[in-house]
Amino acid sequence: MNDAKILLVDDEEELRRSTAQALELSGFSVETYSNGDHVLELIGYSFPGVVVSDIRMPGIDGMTLMQKIRELDPEVPVILVTGHGDVQLAVKAMREGAYDFIEKPFTPEMLAGVIRRAMERRGLVLENRLLKAVAGKRDDIEARLPGRTQVMVDLRYRIRAIGASDADTLIVGETGAGKEVVARALHDISARASRPFIAINCAALPANLIESELFGHEAGAFPGAVRPRYGKFEHGRGGTILLDEIGSMPFDLQAKFLRVLQERVISRLGSNEVVALDVRFIATSKVDLEAEVAAGRFRADLFYRLNVATLHVPSLSQRRADVPLLFLQLVREAAARYGRDEMTVPPDVISDIAQRDWPGNVRELRNAADRLVLGLDNGGRQAEEATGLAERVAEFERGVIASALVAHGGSLRPVYESLGISRKTLYEKMQKYGLDKRMLTTES
Image (cartoon, rainbow, N blue to C red; front, side, top):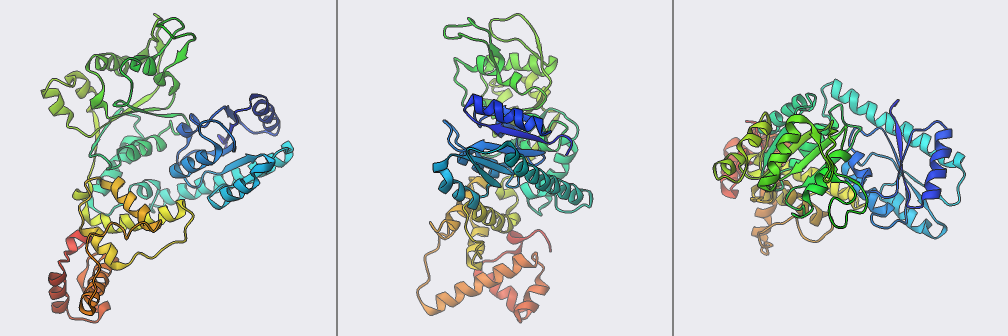
């Protein structure tokens, strides 16, 4: 990993500076941060390095930072630096996925040794991922956006094609469908992967500060602006800017953003100087922007400028066949995230999950998986528990058949052969229990 780097996070400036100098003398490339906010913008599946963080920090502490990093990529090595009284906490962190911990005071040689081993491990992970992708095996895009339905196969194909092009992109989909996951995937397979990924929620920006947040300002630009400040656009130079829910951007700001899109320049508030902007823009929307244009709430010229490369993220109702296997994957991820043993999901739970509606899409399905792993409920099942023997037998039989349909991709012959029943009996039982193979698979 020639571009390998260490992201060093510590709120103590003197210790941060001295540690960075010692690591640079050992031959490492080091970037320092006083908090974890900006670190998360650099982490992705292609991040070629290691994170070293103090545990005790204001704002995002080391434990929280590690958990957020693991959500982005669980195989990024995180090394925690602890005080004497934090060893118990560090041991807990190791159980939850930290690569290692170093207790203060430590020698530069000790830290450098741990980092070298972590770098080697990260290099092997990235090399293995690359080899899998080259060999045509299940790659990171498929791991992050799983599904066998044609709409998901097509989506992954378009992501790979558009991701390499560096084109500005519009991502459309319902709430919870995974629009930000798609945006991060586009960033991570692009040449900008090692640069910042800045996510901006257009609906959450305060109206009186939105221009300052995006474009930055000079000292004295408005009351309270005591020092110059980079805006989010400028902070993301070289990387990717995600404008989440761009349909919520105020109409008067849309014209200014259109100029940024076309000319790739910005001017900070209170300044006449033009700053060149080397970024890729990705926008998401849960609403039909064409309808918003017709209603006069969104600029037509901005819509047509964004609509060059468009990705549609399907809702779960559009890919119901993916729900059982997706739920099982989310259960495995939740078990790893919460430090629980892998669990076997009962077939009847899988069957119920497959037939439910999920208006909240993947986000709602993930919450159901989390609750199941934490023992808070039974995966969101709506049916009452069967009490009589006949009801219990019927529930078990239904679950076994549903599980077999999922396992065999909906192909009926191996299902009735493995269950030791005739094709006619299988049809009758599927009709009796309301099982439809099209809800459980895309294969015939």
